[in-house]
Image 1 (cartoon, rainbow, N blue to C red):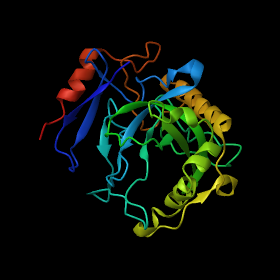
Image 2: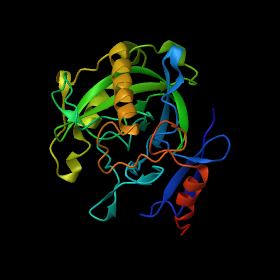
Image 3: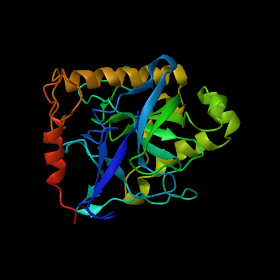
Image 4: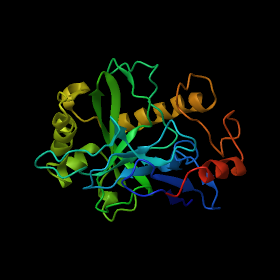
Length: 270
């Protein structure tokens, strides 16, 4: 299964969009049309890279836009860039999301006592390859950190690219601590302090900032997939989220390839 992207507009502008296509060249939603599993039997998931490692532009899946292209976040009318928080440079992993997942803002998590943040579940890819924005990769789940961001549950799932030369050596969160010493500590520090330069307080965490292991993380991802299933079937309130898709045939939001192309054609190249 392969995917590609098509840019509209100019990078580093408010109008820039990165649309996704399937292997047949048809436009799709990275939120709704890319399968959550790359290999369900082996618990290998798909992940959409939003922000390449070492970069600062806060690119994200536009969950409220038709077909959910990648775009740069805007705050107070200005493009958002994450500050360098010493000693870190930009994002310290390939950062992205697992498609067909949703952290339900109506569901209070029993472990964190907070509701979801209304986004697909986030991933931090610790593989050696620096990916490109919009790249779709196959990942092994290793563990998760439970960030509490402004009162919302915001899981940060630690993964490794399944195609990484050393992926076979990473099977749980303890392997990260053993084979990449300091990386988990740096990850916790990054999420704790990355909003401080913007004048916000340090972020808080459930489980006293301890990482949960592989099995817990996989179950967390699978639960957010179930929340997504309810969302795409219109069994829960979508709010401002755009659920337009081209492949979930049982979804009332499913549209034709022609309708999807019309959405993209409506976006200016400028």
